[in-house]
Length: 583
Image (cartoon, rainbow, N blue to C red; front, side, top):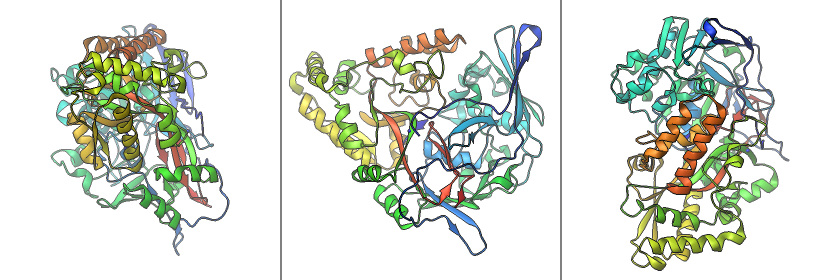
């Protein structure tokens, strides 16, 4: 997901607790998935042990309570499930809300998919090519204020997500639902969307095609339910503990803005007895030195952002874990800008990036130089265990050190062809990034490369996270730091965001040929046809139009206190702390 502010090779399988296949009526097929009984306990820690003792913030008070303190990032832009578009916000939302499906621990610190608020669901492939999912909700599921969660809450929330007036960047996440296109285009009423509460316990969702990642969408924060009586007419509902009513394992207790969000166990959650920490405190910081200092002093139990100069030392000491992360760090060009509307200039700026230098000498967290936009680890047609999308798609440019000068020569020729030989006459342009040590140092490296190899002047401008996100979204920039993390394991999550007028299309990009390939991929359920269209779309995006300059494929460094176990993780970037324990 998402905008970002490797257990190497973790599996991202959509594994269900129980799956039974049978023949369905009417020439279609039926699959039923049922939740396993809720008897799990906290899983084993997935992080490596380190030598020595670490003072931690996971305090046990005199009454035996267990209080966990973690830091993901600074003040979130939004914790409205429909409006959030950042990983840090999604992690918080995952602790306070729950979807029809959810991510659970496989026992080894890795997240797998299982039924969530739905106790079971049935999938039927219809003769007309549509697919119907029927979800049966669990008995006894409640909101944090004690009211029952109903199928109508999901119906309301999905229709709210699709409604243009909501202005949700992630509205397109449910574009496989029948009627979505018409609702999104404001040519049909939201009530025509193919989601219906049959009764309080039964939810029916009709898809226009057999979407291979739909069960992951049902576990994605944008599809989590919200309470209509809390949301309607109250734009500030997320800021008030009284109205921020969720259905997840934890509930908000206090929000001290720009300081912390404090959550506590939700006594109305169906798996309450198995939860770990009595409270989880999400400390809000944007200074990596402050994060590390708080971790070392014991004020924090977990951090995932570090001063870049400190990374090699902590890696060498074994204190730092590096997890898989399905994402790409890149520079994004505003294609509507007077200068960067020219794809030759965009390509020139991309070619002279020395990606090896950045991962070896700047970021230094085991990242892989990016040779395309869709990262390694994303499934291709054959699925897990076979060649992935990046391997099949190949490299769009060489990242071999021996080829760097050749890339630079091509870039200078392109810039001259665009009217700026040796950078002569090229106006000063600006690179925008959000306040963080790593983004600053990468920006400085890019600035030097563009100056030395192209003879152009690039200034740097940093902004606070929320201001930065809004300016980038609105196209108030020329070049911007960007990053995208998979929302599910399919190339669609990286490629459909560049569709004309897409909610996350920060490049302001529009190409009918590109849109046609995305449409073609979404019009078929045949894996080979889908992937052929997605590869063609990436060819247009990177090879022809050079809309963005991929820099590296992410990894996820993090540190968890030695005496905390039970945290689990998915390479989508979500950490789960609700079942941790203090050793």
